[in-house]
Image (cartoon, rainbow, N blue to C red; front, side, top):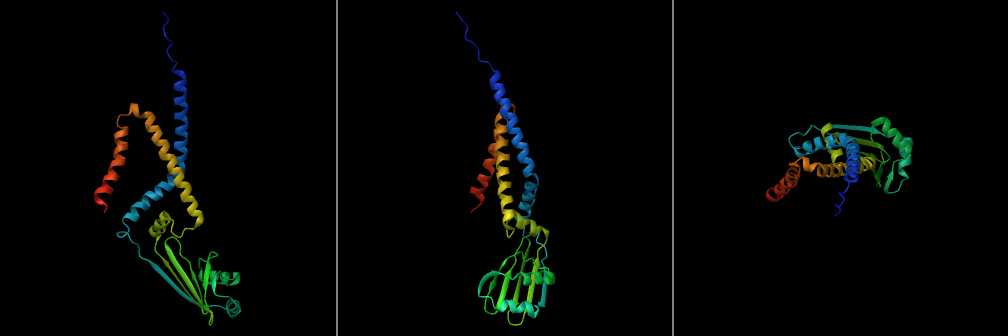
Length: 213
């Protein structure tokens, strides 16, 4: 009577070792990519949650200048609608007011040119009287905390920051999923793994059901 051959555990160990190495590699790479961004978003999550208690004091800068006649003449011929300021006018305003024009489109009407220039942690606008050339510029800076809070929300931060948030979110997904698979692979040696994972799910669900109305 022949004894049935026992399966060789070596291939299974090799597969497990391969997946462990792969998951660890993806986990540490994604964690390195996420590190600074995750710290930023965690800190600003706290500041946003307590925004009413840690509000800064806005600093308002209001200036008035007069556009040179040579530049003013170029504005009178413009039609109503939305269009960027002429390059020479934008250059003069940047030098005179240090205004963050950034190639933005202005709103043109029969009497006035109005340009809104919001950004993270600040609001700014300028208005040009097409008849007199009078320029009024106002900028409100709300401080570094407001700046970082707006970055957290992607508010007025531009398309490049929007792409960064998308890439950061993907890296966070990779980081958490590889962490979950690593937990699954080590769960036999760590009995508390799944109770803690379950706790991380149950607590926010209960808070949402019981205290959010």
